[in-house]
Image (tube, rainbow, N blue to C red; front, side, top):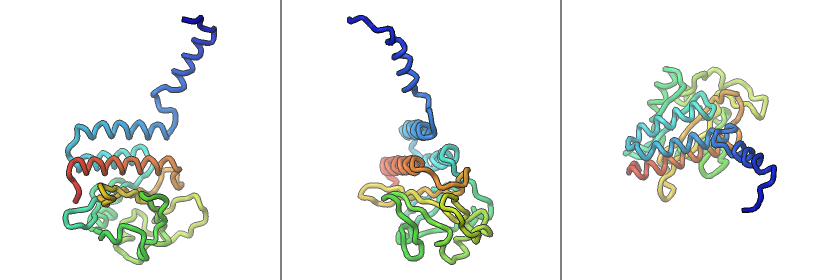
Length: 211
């Protein structure tokens, strides 16, 4: 074995610190949380529990105060299954909401902006003129406030991340709004949500939940 230089011990210490398993930033925290969530799926066979835990993970880690997860039901309609961070009045309206597959993608009635094959941003200015939709928001009176910046995510803005199964069959979606810092989320947050949605899709497929 060759003689080790004086800097060798410092190198080992530097490598341990640089690649420590302790998360160093928000992105690494998200990756670690998703890894733990994925490990838990192995022990979980209850899709309702999976969705509930996913919603709580998004609420606690991704920086959104309002989280919804919806799934396709046996009749082919999509309904919300997980509701976090909403007032009782808003929750009552959300529970009653149901959507056809045609309403789950960009359309004349829902002109959202697709930023990937999984994610779309929807803005308050494009909300349909439907009282039922407006009632689903915590602060409906604020929807009429005029937008003045490109960075602030306002009441009525939300983003959807779709959950797919085999052959791109839509199984459900994650919907988030009202970020804690009031700003549109960074790119790594979107990628993290997409990874979580893909994990949920695999779990639902594995459990045979392809409604």
